[in-house]
Amino acid sequence: MQGTDIALRFEEIYRTTNKAILTYITVKCGRVSDVNDLFQDTYLELYQILQKSGPEYVTNEKALALKIAKLKISKYYTLKEKLKNFISAIDVQGDGKEEDLTENEADPFLLEEYVINQVLLDSIRQFIQEKPEDIKKIFYLYYDVGLKISEIASVLAISESSVKNKLYRTIRQLKNIVETGDIL
Image (cartoon, helix red, strand yellow):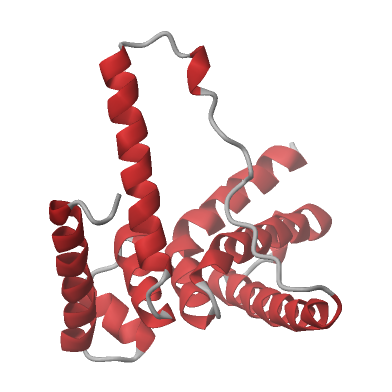
């Protein structure tokens, strides 16, 4: 019974706090590519706390989740700086796995369209990765987290017009590059 109570309490905490915590981590993160790992680590530790202390332990869900997120960010960047002193710069993106398209017995035209779409998506991701961190954060908060422009402006402490300009300017650049075929 205890395990069910813990799972239900965790789901409730996650549902009520995940958007705020994801936004917080995105804003405080040095790199957008670190956000998902820190977000996952935050909720993993929160779940472990619930397992250890019981579902009644948490009285202020958001405060606990924010505290864990702050500690995770602090430890992550401290550890990362220490590792930089010992290891040369290694930047691993993705999970390192490639999808095996040869197993699909699909229409060759659909397969070709799939490959073209994947190349286009990879090119767009690369285009965004080459942008400054503030633009990456705006894109992440807008498209992945689903925040409104006013919410992004608030959490990043910049004006709405600045968020709009950066978002729409980058979208126009992407559109022009895609239309001219320069992105492939």
